[in-house]
Amino acid sequence: MHKYDLDTYIATFNHLCREAHYDRTAKGTIHLFAQGLNPTILKAILFGAAAIPVTMDKWETAACEELKKIAYRETIFPSNKTQFQWQFKSNYNG
Image (cartoon, rainbow, N blue to C red; front, side, top):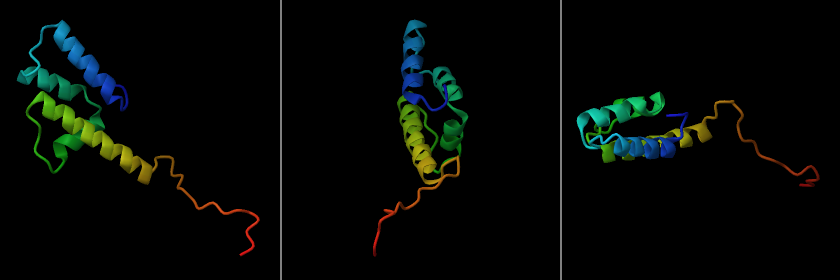
């Protein structure tokens, strides 16, 4: 998985499973999917409060939910430490 491009990862993984005739529901295939996730997403799923997913569909859903949480956290706590600031008009007479 490249950075946080989860949609491409899921689509590519599913395509390659079909091409290789892998059983998408097999534990080994699910394990490969999990191993290929961005480490931040994988750790969030494995160490989060929710149960660890056991099906491919549940893994995909969990990864999407964790990515949403990561995106939201990054808007609240940006990595470049730039915080949003109030903008005032310079001609304010108040």
